[in-house]
Structure formats: structure tokens, C-alpha cells
Length: 472
Image (cartoon, rainbow, N blue to C red; front, side, top):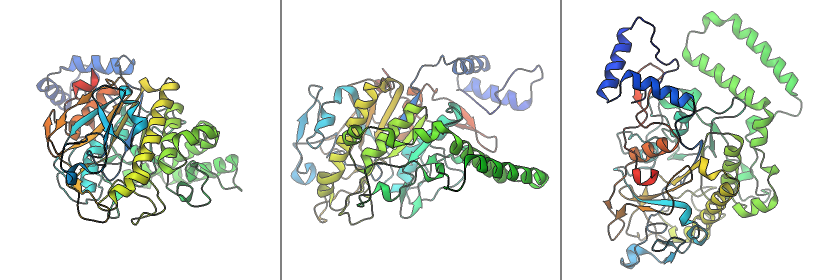
């Protein structure tokens, strides 16, 4: 078990009771204090192998396993739906006919068909898959400071980006159900300073006539026309002087956290490297077309640009924005009705184009082997099609699929399996805990790592076990 703090334990001759307790905990976990020091040294020296970056493609709402990567063509029509499986670049592996570009790249990624958990509500399921820790309740829960941190927050704590860049970006930032922000999408018990840097959804990410198919950088990186960098720096210096005068009155950690957020925002605003990383106007028109001039395509293009610049972790919220959705200005993968219309017209074609473009682009730039790409929703969908308009599939956490690519992940494999209706996992079940342990190991972070929360309490980053078939 690797235990890290802001100031790691070091032998000083005098051993405190707290240090002895930690050493005892390590011994119980199978690792001595000497083992801990050696592992810390290896990580500091970069000797622990693993991907350098991660793009977590979050299919918010939960895609159907049956209509994507775990088809059951011999099941009854009310289970299998209208789609047919097609052959892929890996003999014997079939995926949905609506994903022809991805079918040609199956030899570049692996499919986990046995992801499973016990939850069915959006927010609780999202909290589980975004952190690898179950929230303990199946409800539309709201976030709290006690939430387990999301993956990007843990990576930021252990492997921060250069100071001129955010370590962790969420694009676009809106992850929600029933009006609540999603729990475990931020720093949680690590603190707000480990929250992601958010890219706001705005009009230029919609299909409005003014949209040119390109995402702007976050508005926070843009100065008003009448404020120069020099003027902003002078204002900030004055604010700092005023704050210093009242330093004795600043007793609450929240005030210091706010100061750190302000300073980080200022650093990013003044960083030419950061502004350039978010500037999609620097990409050629042909690449915009390859990814697709729709939100999902431009979000994944931005994700590639960010990791190329040095951002460690990007959570890319890959949803659609059809003109004719009945739900909102954008369409998540929550298709209780209009399921096949939305899959036909928007969700599947956009995923096929955008994700295939991302994988090819990363490979052509020599970035795929150092970038882990993980594609998943918070759940799957019910095997039986409901009677809603144009059919629908409801929430189903007991069986769903996850795509893994890059970052040293085994290529061209199918791991796990489900029954004849893709209803229950029958082979190699993998919980979100196991998925999180695999993600950390792929990034060179031992899954036994223990961090300390803002109150100083030790916490495991995951309680799962790595899926060895993916790690090779």
C-alpha cells in the first residue's frame, strides 16, 4: 500500500506515535515502511511505468450495451432491436453496424463487456464510475465535501501538470441529473483545489446558426478588451496587499482555498501556453471536419489538443446536440424514448466519427501509447425495449461495456461476457472499483496508494483489483 501526504514520511530519528501507526498499517497491508520509501523514490524518479495522460470519454446518461458493443443477434426482437452486427478488424469480434469507423479500429482497443454495479439512478451511478467508490445509496444525490475524488483529481494530486497548465479539465462542465451537479466529479475529500478546470457549455457549442463548429476556450481565459495583462497584474498585486493586511483574520481554510483558486485562475489567464492549448482555431479545417462539426467531435478534438499540450487528465463529456431533441438543448445518452431515432440520427454516428478520429489522431501524432483513453457511461440500458415513442431502453447497471485504448492497454481483446440478453454478467465481472484500479495502474499509480484527506485521515484511492487481462 503506497501512502502519500503533502509532506511524505521521512525517518528523523524520533518516531511519533502517528508514524508508528502508519507503519503498522502498512505492515498489515503487506508492505513495510522500507518498501514504501523505495516505491516513493521510484515514482519521484519516474521509474514506475505507465501512461502519462488520460482522456476519460464520459457517455453521460448510459449507452445501450446491446446497440453498441455487446450485441445479441439471436435474441427476440424486443431485446436485440433493429441493428445488425458487423465484422471488425479483429476476426470473430462484432459490433453494431452503426459504428463502421470504429469497427475498423477494434484491433487498436479492447472491449470490456462485463462492467457491472448495483445502482440505477444517474447521479449515484455516475458518482460510482467517476471515482471507483460507491456512494452507498441509489438516488439522485447532491455532491458534498465527503465525496470520493474523481480520477482527474487524484491524478492532479500525484502527477500535476506544469504550472502554466491545468492538470485536470472537464469539458463541457455540465454533468447532471435532475438539476443536481454530479457527485464525485471533483476534488471531494482532497479539497476544492483539486476540482477540474471547467469549460462551460455555451451557444457556440450548440447547433445555433452562429455556431462555426469550433469550441472557444473557457471564458475565464479571456480578458475584457479594456484590461491588459499589465493592468490585471497590478490590480492583483493591490488585492494581495490588502489580503496580507488582514492575514490574521483569515482563520478558515475556505478562505485560503479561495485564494489558491484565484491565484491559479490568474496564472492560467496570463499563461500563453494555456490560452494556446484551448485555442481550437489553430487546428486546420480538415481536422475539424474529420472529428465532426458537432459538439461531440469538437469536445474530443479539444481533449486531444489539451493532452498534447501537457494536461494530465481530461474528462470529455461526449453528448449530442440534435436540433429535434425533446429533452434540452443537448441530448445525453439517457434514451427512455426516441431511442432508435436518436441513435440513428445523432448519438451513434457522432460517436463513431469523433471517437475514431480521436484514436487515429492520437496514433498519428505518437500520443496514443502515452495516453490512456477510457470510454464509458455510468450504466447500460435495459435489455427489453419499452413501449415509449420510437422505443426506449431504461436504466441498467448490472451489465454494460467499457472501451479501453492506448496507454499500454492490451489491444484487440474482448474481456468478460454476458448472458443471451446482455442482462447479467456471466464471465469476469468488473465493478467500477476494479475499473478504477485498472485506470490507476495504467497511469503508473499503484492501486494500493493511500492519500490523506483535508482532515489528515488516510484514504484508499480505490478498493478494487486491476483487470489483469487489460494490462497484459
